[in-house]
Amino acid sequence: MPDQVLSPVARSAAAASAPDATATIATPTGFRLTAHNQYNATRLDAAHLPPAPLPLFRLWLHEALRPTHGQPAVREPEAMTLSTCANGIPSSRVVLLKEVDEGFVFFTNYTSRKGRELTGHAALCFHWREVSRQVRVVGEVQKVSREESEAYFATRPRGSQIGAWASPQSQAVGEGEMERRVKEVEEKYPGEVPCPPHWGGYRVMPIEVEFWAGQPSRLHDRFVFTRPDIKSEWSVKRLAP
Ligand SMILES: Cc1cc2nc3c(=O)[nH]c(=O)nc-3n(C[C@H](O)[C@H](O)[C@H](O)COP(=O)(O)O)c2cc1C
Image (tube, rainbow, N blue to C red):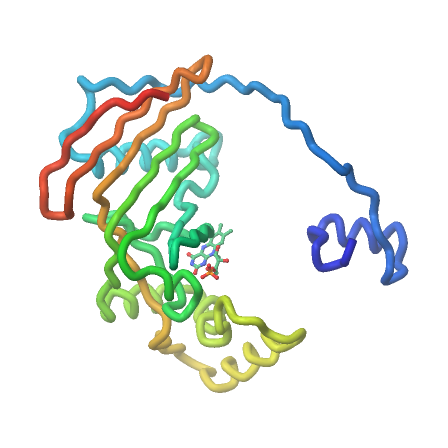
């Protein structure tokens, strides 16, 4: 197996057992995943739903962040899968939710693959395993204002600020190129690091939000809020699991 397809753990294990650069490790050739985990989330019922989804999302996020034994109930609940589509070809990756106001805000490189694909609509998916909950969102994508991006950029750690300048995100780079680029940016900005013009936020303005609460025997509770556009009223219906 080529070295670059091994995980860091597997790579170091391979290196420890056989420092020879051509080393390979034995891995199972097939997996059969037979667990039948049962989910048991707090039930969701129509009588207790608010008229719009964002208050319920905020409540679920609040519950996910609530400390349990000194840790949030859900580890990094702000991690969400962002899916985009271009020419009928979908692509997904994880980004971090930074704000929920009338939409879901995250920050990235505008020239990255996702940046190029974020033109009309996008989908988000949160999986909060520890509480057996999932939230799916479909929405219209808007860029956040320059002021908002700059204000958030100013709060980032210096290393992340340097990285935003140094990384031509999603493009191929040579071995050692990132280290060289980081060094150059560090030398260019010994003090304050300005927000790069190619870096900023997006706000996904929801037109569909589904709440999923896992239940025993796969009879999960699902409610989907939909509206035809971001100015219209919401309607809600229960979905079969
Ligand atoms: C937990 C986690 C959080 C991440 N957060 C962000 C983020 O907020 N913004 C971002 O641009 N990339 C983030 N990434 C990296 C993206 O998943 C992705 O690799 C990168 O944005 C390039 O994606 P693209 O080539 O599809 O544009 C995160 C990855 C993980 C695993």
